[in-house]
Length: 469
Image 1 (cartoon, rainbow, N blue to C red):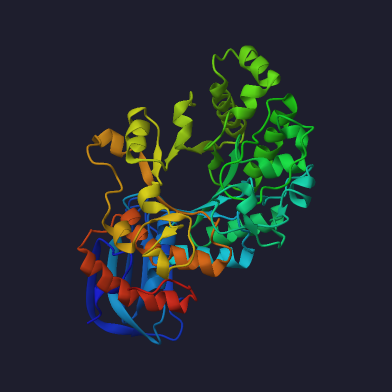
Image 2 (image 1 turned 90 degrees about the horizontal axis):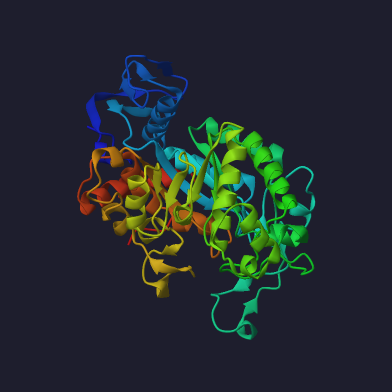
C-alpha cells in the first residue's frame, strides 16, 4: 500500500485504499467542481480505480487540491495510488518573498519558481521589485526608471567590510526590468497555479535607484547619484516635495492596475533620516503637516500610500518598522525583526504576517559556511525551520486570529542566479510549507524521512536544491 509520508505538506486527513488507478494522462481523468457544503478553505480529493474527483469550497481551495493532486502524480508512470484526502490550511498566507531588485531574474525562472511554490501549496509570491540596487518595473511616464534605474555599472564582490578603498567589484554591468505586459502575464501564470503575486515598491527609503534616474526625487537634486553598487542601507531617501508625492501616486496607481491582489507592499523598512535632518524643506514640511519630529515623516509617507491604494481597493503591507509611527488601522504588518514585534502588532490590532529573520530568512547559511556558497551571514538549518517556534507562545485567541500566516524570505544580494535561489530555498521551503499549512507536526526524524521520499518530485520539476546531509 502507498505510504502517506511521501506527501509534503502532510494533509490532516488521509485515507489510503487498496488498488491503483491506471491512466496515461491523470489530468484528463480528473473531474473538478465547487461544493457549497465545504468550507471556503477546504477541499476533498478522491482517487479510485475508476478515476479521480476533486471538490472544494472555493477557487482557492480548488487550487490547493490540484496542487495536492500534482504531488501525487508527479513522477508516477501510469499507476496512481488510490487515496481520499480531506484537508484545509491553517494559515491563509503561505508566502515566499523573492527579491529581484538586487539581482534580476528572467520571467521564465520566476515561472519555474511559481511551479515549485504551487507544488508545496505556497500561495503568495511577494515580489520585491525596487531597491537601491535596481528598479525592475516599467512605469509609464518615467522612462528613466528602467533606462537608468534598472542598471548598475558593477557589483560588490564579497561582503561589505572595511573601508571603501578595500572593496572589490566585478566590473560587470547588471540589470533588467519587467514590462507591464510581462508582469500582467506573470500574474495570470501564477493565478492559474493558485499563487497570488503581491508586489513591493519600497518607500520612502531603499530608493537610490529611483533617485539616480530622477535626482529631483531626492533631498539634494544637485547631487548626481548612480544606482547603488554595494549592499547595505543607503542614506539617499525620497524628498518631501509635491513632485515626490505626485511620483508616488503615479507609481502606486500603475502598480495597483497591474496586480489584482488586494495588497501592495510598500516596504517602510530601514529608512535613515539623516538627509531629512539636514533639509530645510523637510523641517518646513514637519511644521506644515503638524508633526513634532523628523522621524514622523516616514509615517506621513505610509499614510499617503495607504490613502492612494485605498482609492484602488488595496491595503498596505509594510515591514514592522512602521509600528514606530502612526499607522492606518487596516495596515498589515510583516514582522521580520523579532518575535516581540508579532506580539506588539497583534496587541495593537494589526493583522500580521510572520517573516522573522531568525528562522525564515533563507539567504542565511544552511550549514557551516566553509562548505557552503557565500551568503549574507547567519545560520538557519532545515531542522531549525521545521522545529522552531514561529508563532509566539502566549497569544490570546483573538490575537492568534490576526496572524495571517508565515512567509520565507529570499533576499538576493548573494543569490545572483536562479540556481542559487533554488539552492537556498529548497528544501527549507518544504519545511516552511508544512509549518504554514499547519500540518500535524511530527518529530524531526519523521519529517526528514518524508522529505527524502519527496525529493524526487523536486527532481521532476528541475529544482536545483541543496542535498540533504
